Length: 66
Image 1 (tube, rainbow, N blue to C red):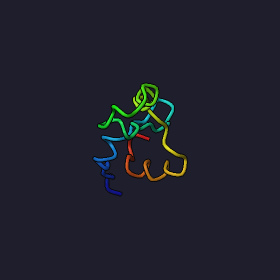
Image 2: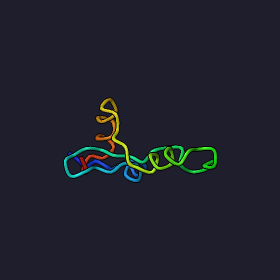
Image 3: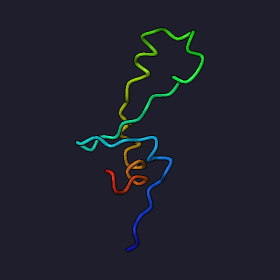
């Protein structure tokens, strides 16, 4: 069986925690920040867990990290 290749785009977007959970950065924090509240911007800066429905797809793209 040959080695599996890691999806380079997924490697840059997702990180696997020590317990095996997959986290990602949240969207909508790049521009047009003046109309967003301080609380909303603060929450967008935190990491988010991926949906369980997407976990299998992400693990396929990151074969040696999960």
